[in-house]
Length: 395
Ligand code: PMP
Ligand code: GLU
Image: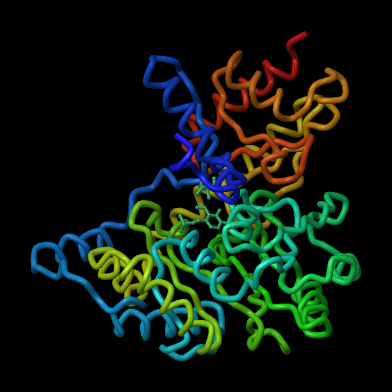
């Protein structure tokens, strides 16, 4: 039928690679295969019970109706307080809105600021959805190549050069980074903010892993650095730290004019984020759960250490210890070269021959690498390492 057809823009949008691999692994599992899935990054812990109970209470007490489009005022205020207390951000309640997950917050932000044809810099390796989100906002993604030799933190001079060469209008930052786990030092981030200030770029800072840090790393938001606040849109929330993956909640913090524009967009495309989830998020803001968080970080730390040690003993693979988030970006370039295959084939062979699901680095614009999520049980990680070793040693 000629009349009804996906348009050119939607045809350019690929399915999220992380979700596609996870779906494939789940289908294999359902058919009875003993698949270990280190594909999508989703913690294996439950949503903390006090937070889940707040959602149940909302249902039981009938708080199940529409709310204001940018979220209930108490939650916007609690979000501003939480962002201040946790990251030192200085946004008032009218500069914070509630969105339906970090993905939706990124989407609202890009929709609000990108003009048709604007070039937007994305630093590789990048989380899979950024180029598609820029394209959907009618912008043009420009990928800045990865710098594994610098621990995946770009030199500000390279960012300046790329921005000038492409006439970029904005830059997406994601620290702690998915997939590399990179966390820049304050001065490295300041140098990038200085470039943004000099070239008048806006910054979209995805800080969804902002509390998941190792080895004494500290998370700094570009919005707290000199020259940062007025040009930065911050995406944050509890998706990863509190396993609120299915609740679909997040915060977007930015100067008032941009937040107002995002609220107008959200009022048209979504209405409000789920009312029940907002109650749960309010509980997450108001009730810190230090023991729960310490338990999680201990577990992630142990798994991270296990993977780093185990991978050091597998020929052809290497891993630089990630400083944040819960992904291991494994360098498989040596193995690829020795076998004459690429990272996509590595991931395919791991899944088909060894029942191990990982994401090929090409999905994040870092070919030759594969990403493992260690938001998985130690049992699964042990099996995964055995399978990786069997793969690496197979002739
Ligand atoms: N940003 C990054 C860097 C992510 O890894 C993810 C993964 N879910 C998201 C955003 C989306 O998070 P949410 O589930 O809150 O939409
Ligand atoms: N963000 C997670 C990941 O990178 C979940 C999957 C997704 O939302 O794309 O694996």
